[in-house]
Amino acid sequence: DDLLDPIPCLYADQQNLQTPARRETSQTPWFICCTVRLPAKSFIIFGVIALVILLILAGTSFKSLQQKMEKSWVWLHRLAYVAGVLVIVHYLLSIKGDLFSFQGDFALPIIALGIVSFLLMVRIPAFYHFLRHWFVKE
Image 1 (cartoon, helix red, strand yellow):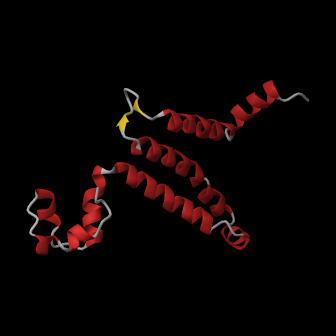
Image 2 (cartoon, one colour; image 1 turned 135 degrees about the horizontal axis):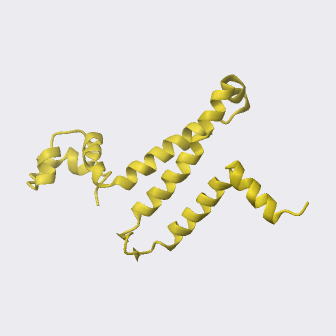
Image 3 (spheres, one colour; image 1 turned 120 degrees about the vertical axis):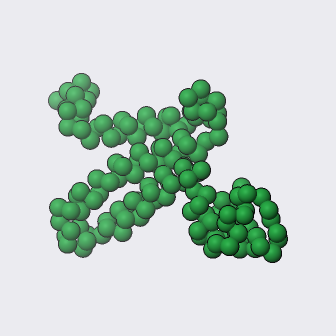
């Protein structure tokens, strides 16, 4: 799998590769070759979006930026929930097999989906109060 390998695109003309996939990308830079082939690998798109969100959140986590951004910082950091869902979708799509017939190693991503879902539901006030009412003795 040469998804991110720049060599086939850069040197396709010298190697006289005549396959249809190589023909369309033979005279383009490697980074354009990679973006042409990305839609076939949708799990990479989900992973990159989640990574970008998490990098933005990491970059804005400093106290000085929190004070400068004020309320917009809170809204920005709510993207952590979106990133959590994107990471799980990335994980599910990256596993070889069929998700709908459970052919493949889907146990770990399903467990991770359950954990992330539970953690996101705990942030909902009604669910939090329900858990607190049933499981916390006062």
